[in-house]
Length: 128
Image (cartoon, rainbow, N blue to C red):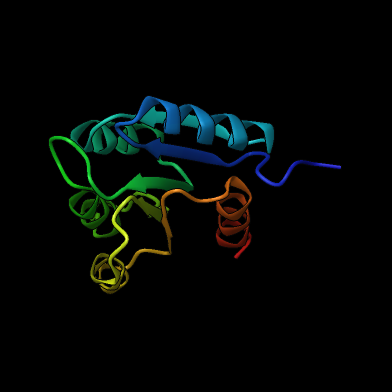
């Protein structure tokens, strides 16, 4: 039986190394190949080179916000694969979620979240 993410690549972007390590471990245990970035500029660079199937993206990042990263990834006109994006944030307000959804985010989770919830969201996005 294959793991849910066999053959899938995921980019995890967050400036908190503990969050990055927890998400990376959970996704790798599910069979994903995972790359990471700690700021918005690095996220763009890594995404352009690795062309991930999914990006787990913090909304609040150094150098370039998660919203600007998502805009760049979702509106790439070079013919590269457009990844699915799950935005994660510590902001409890609904305004950020509404803005993210209007910009084309595929999933949205408020921190703290249960890792099972992230894995379920990722499975649904990558299956469809």
